[in-house]
Length: 101
Image (cartoon, rainbow, N blue to C red; front, top):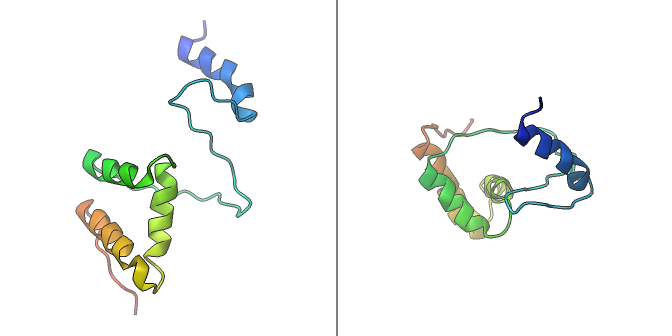
């Protein structure tokens, strides 16, 4: 016997492949033309995640996290706040930020 959740996922596979979303809690992600195939995983507290989700609005949280990460690596004065917020979030999560020589 197939568990109900697995049966539902199997039934939804074809729709998902055609970008049809059956449930509001479903996010469809695709490999982009930029060839994004690597994954970076970090652990966040609920509060940290909620801060990112608030910034993201209706976009995926991963997209705003990626944008903040790359904004932090540019020398653009307009993006210094994003850099500082990302650094604070990472340090609060236990990461130590250092600059290579």
